[in-house]
Amino acid sequence: MAVPKRRTSRSRKNKRRAHDHLAAPGRSTCPQCGEPKPPHRVCGHCGFYRDRTVIDTEED
Image (cartoon, rainbow, N blue to C red; front, side, top):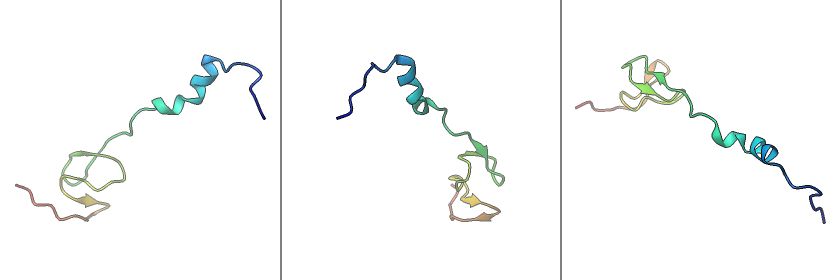
């Protein structure tokens, strides 16, 4: 059975866990309405994506 010969140091442990603290994905603006939205997603405000309306949303 494999057993570690030495204790894993804090720096090595934290390097392995570095992906847990990455920043949130950036925001882009919708070209149709200008609202902020996640990149490569349908705009939740107007339903616009890649030069066409994908979801029909009713604006109040």
